[in-house]
Length: 67
Image (cartoon, rainbow, N blue to C red; front, side, top):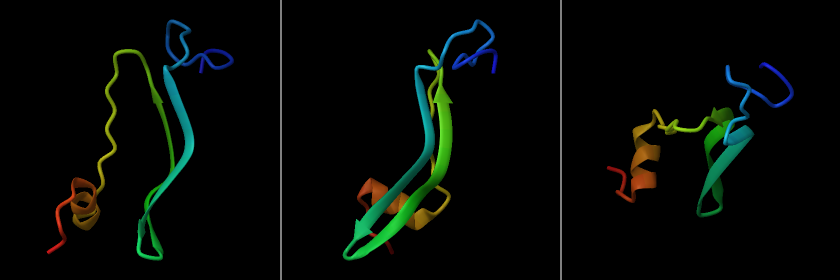
């Protein structure tokens, strides 16, 4: 970090900064955690994707039914 809120070599702040992100999906009365405590920053021109490692969660997000 090069200064207060400045994060790149040119001293520009990120376009998006997320700290301690938590996301859950409701399935009936249960909450299924999908994201736990993620921090990320996105600079101008960057593309960021969050990809899960669990096939079941991926199918749930895509709308496909689990096998």
